[in-house]
Amino acid sequence: GSTETNTGGNSDSIPVYKPITIGGASVELCFNNSNGEYNKLGNRQYIKLDITTNGSYSFTANGQSAGDDPDVLVYQQGVAVFRSEENGDESFNQTLNAGTYVLEVYEWLNVDGNDQTSKSTCVDVSASAN
Image (cartoon, rainbow, N blue to C red; front, side, top):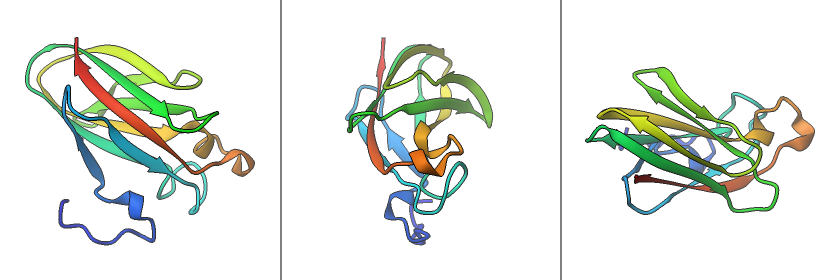
């Protein structure tokens, strides 16, 4: 929650759910592999998104460094409703009903199971109504 102070040695890990606003400023998420690959602290970041109106929404996840490959999964109530795992930056439209969603964002090279390809990097995520 908002009062969490234990970072596990990784200041990018809190808050666990970063807020994003439709049509608002992008959210910067930073990733690293200092704790290992795939399912370790720092490999993935989460964004909480509240949709108030049923409709079509656009999302982008743009890496800040050359060779970045961010990927995005969209969940509602723990169920994956959409994923965008293209090579390179992500840009997609999705029809969503009103409700609360969680976006799981990660750098592919930190979850590909190859310690030799891991990297520390940051990604800018944005959301807007169509």
